[in-house]
Length: 80
Image (cartoon, rainbow, N blue to C red):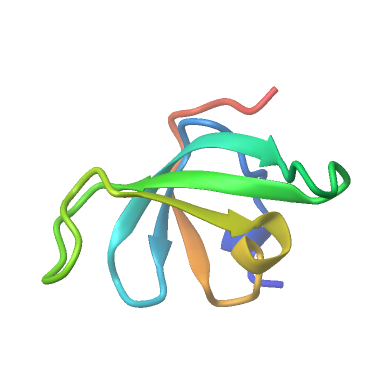
């Protein structure tokens, strides 16, 4: 696992997707069908050709941590 994905996933942290756009974590949620499954809820910080800035996305924590998919880009948020 790369260093970015080894970092804690916490609300307010900012991440860069492998395709280059940046996102901010707004929540870590539980799947209603399987509460053992955690989901990362994140918002885009930039427009794309298809989706506007502010689009909200959800991805499983496992997928979010896939090596090379996201890299942490800001450290101003302290995880608790």
